[in-house]
Structures are given as structure tokens and as C-alpha cells.
Length: 160
Image (tube, rainbow, N blue to C red; front, top):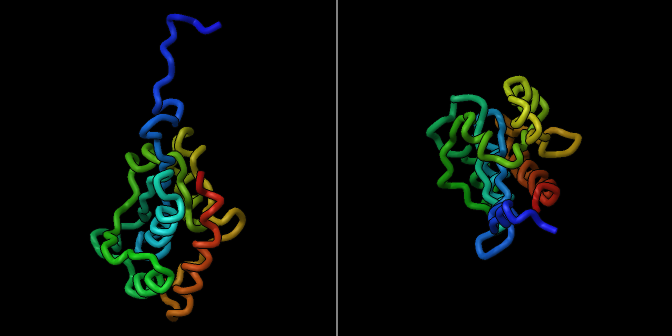
């Protein structure tokens, strides 16, 4: 028997109804210039209406700038458009907003963990379960293509 003083859960609370709540994913890399923007595009496309995805970086170096031209090109070869991406630095509001925070490598994860409160710490994980996503920053173009393929292959495990 239910307690008559307890209101029934709303559609948002049950994740059902006409407008179910999307699973919120934040993808974080070092500069929000290569890996996290393409990961956000991949997760958004594959997750469709089930997810809301944002990306950010730990450093300010690329804030306000677009994604690396080689990543834009590599993403386009796989059918992902990140041409309009603008880099941002991760902040507390983003971490609070997210249901899941995915770090692209162990160093990023360690830095996030070092500053996380208990609620945020519970949301943190590595994008690839047991490996880093290589940052192709100074590599030749084929490394950017490989990065996109690696991120695409790892995406499904993060989608509801």
C-alpha cells in the first residue's frame, strides 16, 4: 500500500512520459581541441534523443577556438561535423550537470579526481574502460583517423 501523503513520482523522476529526461554526458580531455569534441559528436549521434552531450577541457589554451583542423577533417571522413565546435574549460557547473563524466585518458581522470567532491567523483570514469584514448595533437593525419575510430568503437558502452 502506498502512503497517501507521498506524491506520485513525476515523469522526470521516473524517466518516462512524453519528455523523458536525457542521460547527460560530459566528455573531458586536456584542451577540448581534439578528442572530447569528436567524442561528444559521436555520442550525441549514436545516443540520439536518449542523451545530452557536452565536451570540455582542463586547460585554457584553446578556449574560444575551434577543433584542430585535422580532427575536423578526420571527423568528417567518418560523417561527424565538429566544424562549429568552440573549446571551453571544464567548470563545476558542468560537472554538476552531468550524470556521467568521461575522461579521455588516465591523466585527465586523475586531475578530475583530485578536485572532485564525493558526488562528482562517483560520476567519473575513463572513456575506454582500461586504456587511454591517444591524443593525436602532434601526430600525422592518420593518427587523427585512428583516434576517431577508437572513440567510435568505445562509444556504445556509455549509452543508455
